[in-house]
Length: 287
Ligand SMILES: NC(=O)c1ccc[n+]([C@@H]2O[C@H](COP(=O)([O-])OP(=O)(O)OC[C@H]3O[C@@H](n4cnc5c(N)ncnc54)[C@H](OP(=O)(O)O)[C@@H]3O)[C@@H](O)[C@H]2O)c1
Image (tube, rainbow, N blue to C red):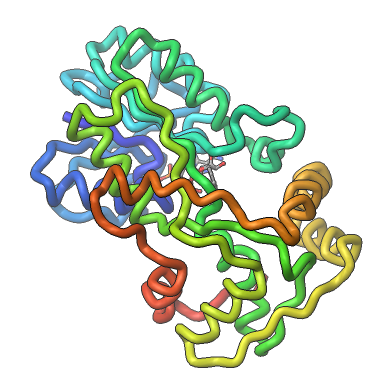
């Protein structure tokens, strides 16, 4: 039995799907079972990983835990300790490729993500562990641009020539499933990137191609971007650190590790494939 936290999210949802398809017994944890919309064969359990005691029953009789750093937040270590107490033998943590950077320079921390703590909890657990050090999710592009794409063909943002190697969420989930179902990744911290480095302008053009629209990127000054993001409620420290990180990538190819390909023994999904997969997504919200 595999307990998956973050099961309704970007990585967790396809992970649950892959595990279910592979015939594994899965318990999908969510704070709201009524809204989970997971496939019928999956056991859905209500609980909040940030309050580990609410998962005590879900962990009973299970052998493996997928530890999600946003779902568990500051409770990562407590949750893993409880899992161990309940007989869990393996923990696979989602983490990030920047976990070794200065904590103050990790933008996601200002939104409550605890990637470093998830990795540390897994590594220090005394259990079989894997830490999946994920790179830039391809889906971030929709978070950043969806609202603007809904309004026209020009997308405004800072640093058109900043680079990323966007990774498809289905590849992250496939690697997580591999870590849970085989012994190949025990004791490893693979850095999971997409297969190619692209500029922000190139990523936008690829989305345009997928939806058959001539999208173009128009650079705006970082201060204008900052005001825009703060207007949508993003914390100032998040925007400042994000800008500080991406400016460093301008003119430099993003790291491409090839780990997804090695682990899955097939090519990693490209950004063009990701964009095609999402071309028919519901119309963008006004963000
Ligand atoms: N975006 C990137 O480029 C990137 C790169 C590397 C690493 N990461 C890390 O990956 C993680 C995000 O993964 P994801 O996109 O799969 O997450 P997600 O979809 O946003 O969230 C996963 C699930 O966690 C639960 N959740 C969300 N916010 C919560 C909160 N505030 N309190 C308690 N539970 C919450 C929700 O489940 P229920 O509502 O069903 O309970 C949600 O479905 C973060 O730690 C992020 O830093 C991201």
